[in-house]
Length: 163
Image (cartoon, rainbow, N blue to C red; front, top):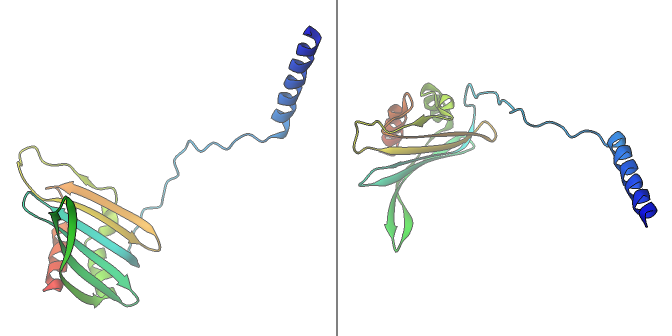
């Protein structure tokens, strides 16, 4: 019996040894892949900006198709324990006009922005931005009474377009 066990162990050791020679080593994916930062927005699919405070919650949505952009404002209310999204107003604008304001406001540089709530402010406006630009690249930014540069200019442009 002891001979069988020793033979089995020897056979296992040989298989492991041979497998180590035959099988390639696993690739090391421990290093993070650095993505090239977006320098300019040349196209976009959807940009969604949600703003909320103690008294309201709204969502601005820009959806690009061909040469036009549909801009919409939704109010978000809670009813029966669920969020209800209701269209308040919408407008259409030229895609090149939208791309110009997005680049003038530096939207590409907002990716990863996190604006922590200032300690000396007891209330305020929170925002969350998600955008899909340049054939699938994502931009995400969020904050609470702390916004990226030119955020207010972008919101003012959206409101102006909505009338």
